[in-house]
Image 1 (tube, rainbow, N blue to C red):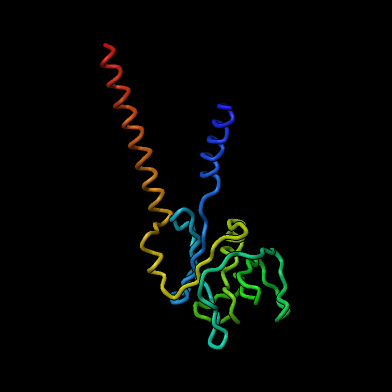
Image 2 (cartoon, one colour; image 1 turned 90 degrees about the horizontal axis):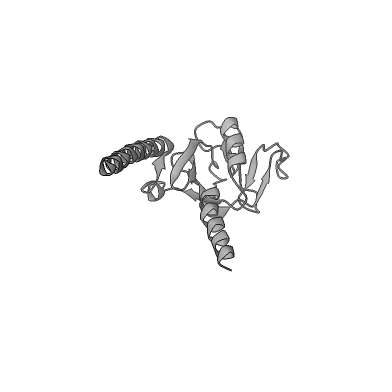
Length: 173
């Protein structure tokens, strides 16, 4: 009985590291997309959202479907690396990104970013489409900041271990 509790605890403990909290934030005002993992901006790029008359809807969505090679049923055009946000046809996909809203409602991203995002993002990932990125930006750090903090923590851990080892050695003598 005790052994099974330990196994369950270990499984839950390690699964929290395996399944990081991933989300995507799309900033319609600045035409940017951010892939976030545990409050760290892992990658970002420019986008092209819906032009006048075809506005991209703001709100909170989940990725409903993923297709590597998708053809639009409305426009009969390819939409590579498609991540569907609504049943009405709004999706994130590879496409031409002229640095201003130019799509028919979808969120176009550059090819290299589309491919990385497609494989990074699991089904049901939360996607926030917003006009006010600052609401989210207050708690986010860049990947470079995260790496720097992680490197500092590793250095501190090594120094702390060396001090601890030195103190233990001195006490033995």
